[in-house]
Image (cartoon, rainbow, N blue to C red; front, top):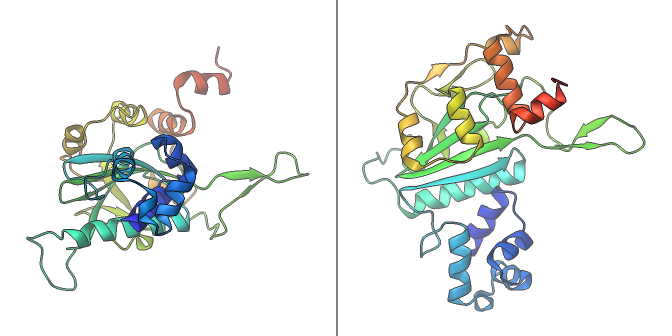
Length: 263
């Protein structure tokens, strides 16, 4: 499962050194193991790796478990995430799914959670669900970097398209997932589970249990009423929308108040 582990940490933006620090195992030991030298990690040390990554004794994602991952919308991380999903489904395909080529036997359901979105990223959280495995993903756009000798000018580190109308992430880049029933995320239409302010705060505070997410997903999907106007650059501002924007930009109310110079 060394390839699976490497893809998993890549998808989450972790380095081998970071995994080594979390497990208190030498960097060279984990590096060599991932390069194909299994003897470099004893069973006890490998068990520590599995524990940090919340994997079962075989090094696979566990059922009845909620995984919470932060994934940057970059090609290498999306490809790694796609491989993690594919390997998981191929190891234990759904027994009651059709064997037809059009079936989703080897795919996760993707459920966008609406609320606190920004232009190009209307659903910053998705739930990927398959066979009692739930992955809550917080998407982040590629960071910007300050261009040397040009003060206050920032360039996007992503070398891909800068088309502002493109919705990120594009599910076509994640072939091992498909939209759940009545869900959609495109430049024309955004449909998903609408979060309340309280739910969004709970997500951001990372205080979620699996049963809580299951309850949220019982809600009927709705269409985001603001998305079409955002695409036309005719934003219909409401206090609720302004609050969502502030919650997306700032970590807490104190930070927002300081930035806005509210006394």
